[in-house]
Amino acid sequence: MNIQLEDGSQIGTNLISAIYRTDLVPVPVTIELVVKADDRLHKLLLIDKTLTTPKDVSLTIVKSQVINEQSIKAGKRIAALHIIAVLSGCEPLLGVTKKAVSLDNTSFNEVYRALGAKVRIKKDIKLASFICLKGQMPTVAIAKALQKESAVICHTDNGLSVIRLNELMIGAATLFDKSAVQWINNPNAIRHGNVNYLSIDDNGSDILGSARTERSIEYYPRADNRELKNLRRILITKATITRQLDERLDAGKLITVDNKTLVALTAAHRFESGALGGPAVMATKAWLAGVEDRS
Image (cartoon, helix red, strand yellow):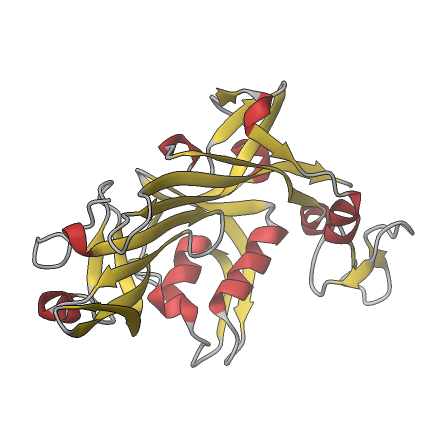
């Protein structure tokens, strides 16, 4: 895996392992590296330094830790660096907020900027309101706002997009044989994940939403009927697929298996160079989900 550093050079043969991961979450791209350390890489793989993937995705280092390996070479113990980087501009979302953010008649673009993120969402949707209190995790508040709009954050070659679940399942899908997929049959995940949300109308007395006894019930403040309906439309993991490196399985991509269309909820591309012994590995594992609507 060719990863470019800030000075234009590449990690090259010093790369021990890498996991490049995409998700349908507020910080949708991460990479985790283990690299043989030398003086050059010690300087270029510090916190806040940037990396660029072969697809020109820029990531900023948020963790850089020295690991002393058991192996010895030329009389010296081999040291490695454990690196974690996230999509550039999203770093402020990883720590608790220093001030409260409260917005009305807003959008996810405005929410990200208000929380300190320096990214632009090219395909956006409107939000009636957004609140993240001081000391809370911005990613949790964004995830709740996405759930109220029945939407996800997706990273593509064109950048970030906010996509509603109904739109997410529309488009061209890649066909896979069912023998490549491991199905997950867990009705409890659907029952526990799909909650009856109730709220109170503006008059302070009428209850909004419906309570079905076969599912748990939670109170969701300041939600209208549209938002309560959206809260009951969720993604549930249906299967996993493990293959040799397959970049078609990035998060947000559709696949068809046995006449069922699923979306890649999470995709992890793993590289093992074999630099410390053992075979080289290039593999992809994806978690495939379908939309459950229990309105």
